[in-house]
Length: 231
Ligand SMILES: [Fe+2]
Image (cartoon, rainbow, N blue to C red; front, side, top):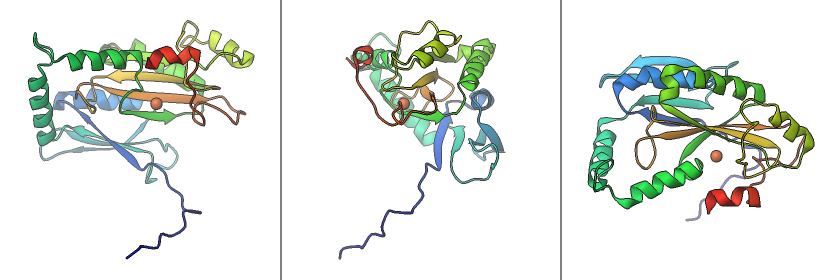
């Protein structure tokens, strides 16, 4: 029997949530603080029967119960932690006989934090990104657990180039976005451990300069400025 699908037109679809994990119960409060520093609003903090805290965050500051734009954060469930531990042991992660795929994976991620699973947030203020990343760099606890990497907009727009030349976060940057008229800022943190090696997670912030039909979130480009990143 063929199911008759309703027409897609008129249906509103958004991403409701992403479910993230910290590795140990001790990491929970710091991981939650990182989320808040990055602008998410904490709306729930609940002890779990298995230990650790479950958090709910939202991007919807003005309507916190809205059922989309949610990040859930909790400790790795025991079965997942066991799987990751067994996988890392078999791969010899960190040991003298570490599987060569581990180093190759880390090297690829160092070149481009977008190679693998990551979570991206769009904000409508470049100043917000600059302020929050400066705060992260100044935070003794969170900066130790996080690495920052940023991409400038592809060059060629004089107004955008001048704005970024004046930015404390972007002025000396020679990495570029896969697209025009926007910027990216990444945090790679070991406070959140979802992903292939179960040791770090990349969180991305995007800003699109207003007034351009074509931008980093509308069309991806591989240009001479970015080709090196995916070589
Ligand atoms: Fe991305």
